[in-house]
Every structure is written in C-alpha cells, then in structure tokens.
Length: 147
Image (cartoon, rainbow, N blue to C red; front, side, top):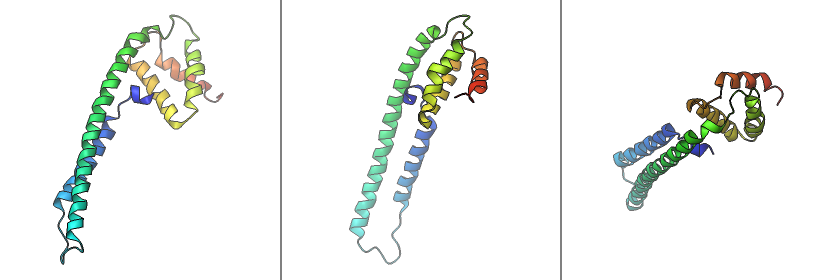
C-alpha cells in the first residue's frame, strides 16, 4: 500500500505545527472585558481542548515513528528483491509491467494512481536492474490513449 512505500513527513509536521499553534492560542487566551457568562465552564473547556491538542501531538509523533519503522522494513525488503523484478534483455518487460501492474491498478481510485506513480518512482530510485525509467515513460505516454 502507499503507507508502506511513502511517508508524508511534511504532512505530519504541518499537522503538529497546527496543533501547537492551537495550544499557543489557548494559552494566550484573555477573557473578554465584562467577563464570561460561565468562567468555570469556559476554563474547563479550554483546558480540555489544550489537553486534546497535546494528546493529538503525541499520537502523531508516535504514529510517524511507527510509520517510519514500517517504511524502513518494507524498503529493506524491496531493495533485496528488486534485483529479480525484471529479466535481462527482454524488450517486452515494460509492456508487461504496464499492462499487468500499472494500468489495472491506476484506474481504480486516485489513491491507487498515486501508489502506482510512487512505486514507479521507487523502482527508479532503487536503481532496479533492467528497468529503464525513460523507456517506461515512453511506453506509458504512447500507450495511455489505448487504456
């Protein structure tokens, strides 16, 4: 799944920043002039909101750590196995890869299309033997009108 091959670190960081800003706003809160209708209830609500934000930050950090560990494990397996994905000298490997792996999955949902793109990027990044990124894109762009 996309979870295994991609870690959206920037998205995690953005959400943690947003929650920290929310905590800061709660901490800087000043009661309006004239007071509040129910200061005790408002104070309790702010405290609960602050605790909820801090708990969410901790959960996100733990989730990111878990995600990165899973990603490292999957990447190690992929690095070890990528040498066997494509055969040497077969001109039809890219066609088969597109026909049986990419085209069927990338048309299901937008998330599947993103997965396919990330997987091809990963295949390139791993320097997978006998996989030509240039040839892949050439075949993809030439054949995309067929599918």
